[in-house]
Amino acid sequence: MSNRGRGAVLVLSVLVVGLTTPGLAWAESSLPTTAAPNEDTPHCVITAQPMDVAGPLPAPRCFRTFADAIADATSGTVRLDEDAHTLSRSELRLGRAWRTSTVLGIEYDKASYGGWSYVIQGAGDSGCRLGARYKVPTLPGTRNNAISSARAFGGCKSRHFSGPNLTGTSHLCSCASMGLMDNQTSSIRFTSTGN
Image (cartoon, rainbow, N blue to C red):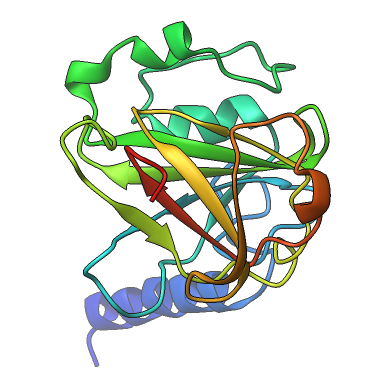
């Protein structure tokens, strides 16, 4: 093998080792993780499915701050202070024309919009305004039966279900407290009417 070929093999070997050794290649990266949310990255973004689509949801993208999650969910058009934990409708309207997705809702771990957050986005920039309907058929393990408050955006109303695939008891909520459905949500539907 020529020296040039050996050099290419060495570079490729270093890249493969760096990509397959946990923590080596991305130790200093601020990229989101696609693994389950954890204490270091408690604020996640997931893309909801249109109601007529079946199959698993894509993996969540999780971030250190709520502001980073909102920036990701809005294609970078909404930038919040690093210590922000809520989002106003006026902040969300900024840059809407440039987005490829919009925020449908935000789920929270604690009442009054506290704790970890789970930002749910839908395709396009119209949300539920043009009759689009979305679902989150199952919540991941650490988010299942753990929601205590929620907010809806994009002309949507969010209906929370106690069972997977939009089954069981349901509660329409864009609210600071889930009431009897506290820590009971396993799936969510977003529509303009709530039905």
